[in-house]
Length: 65
Image (cartoon, rainbow, N blue to C red; front, side, top):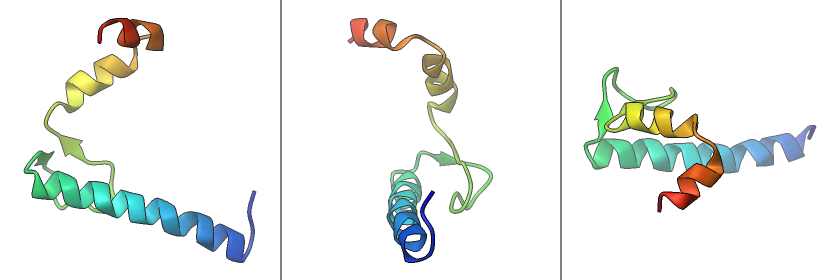
C-alpha cells in the first residue's frame, strides 16, 4: 500500500480516468438517473446487459466475438 505523496499520486490518475468516463457518459447521452453521474457508480444504457456479460466466463466472451 502506498503512503504519503505516492498515495496522492496514485489517486490522481484514478480520478482523472473517472472524470473522463463520467463526462463521456453525460456527453454521449447514455447516462441514466440518478443524475449527475459524477462521484457515483452510474446507471447507463446497456447497463443490465453488461452486468449479465460480466457473469460469464471470459473464454465464452472471447468466443462470441
